[in-house]
Length: 373
Image (tube, rainbow, N blue to C red; front, side):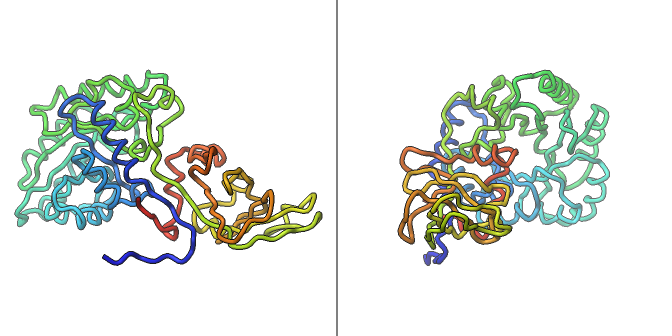
């Protein structure tokens, strides 16, 4: 098989062994017979959906979850057997394609079922559905027991449609205060109690709930998202993790130019950085078009095992760092990951950008190749 050649040294390195270890550790932690739904939406949180899905399945996951019809079709083109669940809303027009490709859709409105029914009349396989319960997230889902019964009856009375599961999503499972979480659990379990027949799969626990909440909430399956990639859902969850997580994502490049500037000379757009003394400046071929957004100015990277700061404004395709001395062209630069004794973590970037770690690998654009090892 031909390996694609990349000429720019900037690349994201994805440790598939870390992905597998994170799955195996969760599998050992869960109750027997609880399935793992590997969440590979958004190109597997920026890690690469096909490679991550394959690694997760090999390690013990049995179901793949995505957010959109297009993501589901892309995954199905590479994996014939496993169940694929679309967690978000799908247009009615996608219903026959989902049936043909054995893709499970999320259902939360009776009129959607009624509109889809004529499109499914001639399909050989039934369209499988998981009912979504809005227990307090406020995003998608039925919001009362009456709505649930109506949707249940609509599905049961519609030809070529099959109820395969029911689920909800917790809004505060990663927080220490469990008041809202407990309210969501109570409502979801009340919904389960009014169903005439429990479907094949009941799932409610996201990553945080899977790791730190009561085991009875694991039901038939859990959805493994952020920690599949070795990242903790929150500082609170990180403080009580039942097993260590192994991050899978690192970001690397090289120095492509090194020069010494004099005191008083400036670097970058707007001349926002001015050297106070003679300073060695290194140029790295990565910028905001790659996801290293301008707000990361001042963020440290690793060169020769030492932390050095990004100086001046980050450009579209390049950024500059202040170096302690002259280095040869081609010297490795680690923007996320480990060099020597130092680590630049995704969480460090998230703190710098005043966001959550989920967002960081997702914003590294497709121009940065993902290299798997």
